[in-house]
Length: 355
Image (tube, rainbow, N blue to C red; front, top):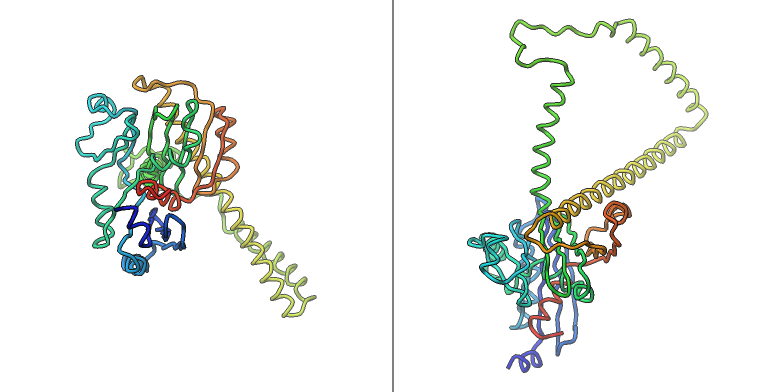
């Protein structure tokens, strides 16, 4: 009956991947297992965004066929994977009382907090959700040609999360999911606390010794004469620059000034992007290093030395990221770009027998 349905009607697969800043949607229309069409759209989660926009975008494709499927990539902050499907052994790794879990290949399971799953289902309201896929399953599927080999590190990088797994001969040996939003909030609180403490120490004051009678004197080295000297120097520099400007017409001066401003803005923007990318690369590397160290040191895992790392990158990391893995962790790193919403679609088609 399912084959007959797929033969008679178009199938619409609606794939949704959300981060803190965007919702990316990929809709694929199939007819007789062949791709009839596809469309992508990205919604920015700014002040002007409303869930009605997503609903209005999806509805026409739902209306065109009675057979449609909506799939999400799980973004629960409380999720993970453990290397067993046995309930008794699973307790050694995680208390799954409040979690929804699924056994994969009869070898390992992935889990997610029930409340988080319910919230994601509720987010689409009356439209409903047919599939919610774990990023661990997506990672395994994306590197299906590799996971059957020797023990290797697999990483799925997203803007606000990192999914880390170690597979050997098709079996999961270790899994770790890092919510970067929570990580950044914790680091921000720690940084603020440390900054306040450092400022107090550098000031040289003993907070406990301060009372209402204490008065702090101004720095005697800063005199009115020195301020006047600085002003006079500034005046001389301004006069020199004015002499140079007299040689140009007002129009040329304006054009030159605008060009200089544009060049400076471009340089600052490029420098800012470079610094931001380098900083993000280091954060990714540091968290992966911590996770790998945990795998090596935790006796519950049958750890062995890892030589290869396969990275599914949806963030466009810089060259520093790969260099860190190779030089600091002595890994042979292989980076593949990934569009998660397209990979979610592949998972749906696999579940429906449409591959």
